[in-house]
Length: 124
Image (tube, rainbow, N blue to C red):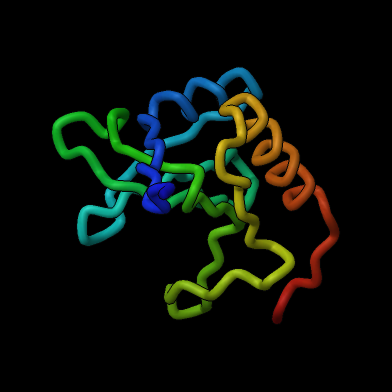
């Protein structure tokens, strides 16, 4: 009989931070409530992307743990009152479990650049 409860493979935040540096982008990991870790990807003049969730390490944020089994990314939107807005379905992306770190970084970087160079209608 096969055990269906395979242990999730976790990786430290440092792995994705380093892989994103290879793509020319800098990630920051922060605690976003209840011990949840979230990566923030931003560059001047660009919309911020969030990547997560993970489990925050208070002693060393770069040792916060994430798993590809539950890794999502997309633009970080807020309304005029500063409240978070849900990602539109075409903007939130899911990482395929088990994807190599370099491939994850390439995918996130490509979508970050694509999102930040597309024409958008500005609300007035």
